[in-house]
Image (cartoon, rainbow, N blue to C red; front, top):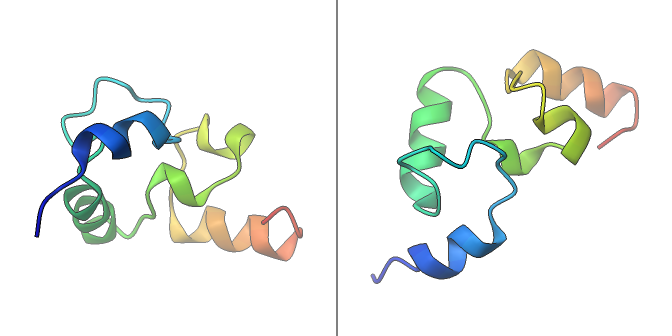
Length: 67
């Protein structure tokens, strides 16, 4: 399977532009899941900027109907 890193990078919602996994979604997801987190693209823009990507933060946002 061909990685679409260039196309993915253009649409990546992560504000950490220096990340080596930016645009390589499979590596990004694997990395965050290993740390009990979700990637930044799973969060609304204002929540993503906090860099709190924990499952707990995501759950809180879902309960508050922000996601």
